[in-house]
Amino acid sequence: MRITLRRARVCDAPAISRIHAAAWKHNYRGLIPQGYLDALDQARWVPLLTPWIAHGPMHVLLLRADGRAAGCIVYGPSREAALQDDGEIVSLYVHPALQKRGYGKALLRAALAHLRALGYAHAFLWVLEGNAPARAFYARSGFADTGRSMDYTLEGAPLHELCYRRALA
Image (cartoon, rainbow, N blue to C red; front, side, top):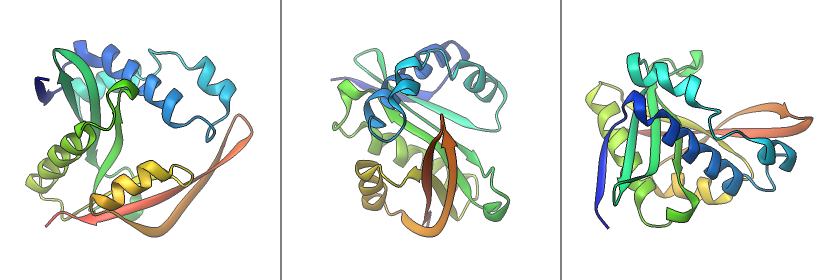
């Protein structure tokens, strides 16, 4: 399979949003209310992604496999006051049909290298506590649970996210 990794363009926002939607429906089954996942619109993330792709402050990378959108990562400056000096991984998704091929690792490696080049010494992200595959992936990638957490509700269901962080040196 021919793989390319590049900075996303505004015209990529719909494909990236479709990757997000497919990954949410697959990866978050049993973690997020099923009604919410069933109703998730494939274009849900286009309004958020478009300005980030066009103007920042977040960076968006797109991984293509054999010419089709396969995965994406969004990262940039921290949106958390307590971690203001860190880079943040906002999201990392690979289309469910293309998972377990090293695409997530390639996306994360590229984003971490770019954050390091931008001068960040650390990167952090939030991960659902119940998402054991993602937590294991991030642990293998050098991230560790910081002990910080965030609770919120989605359609009445409580969700608990953990903050993971790693050095970029």
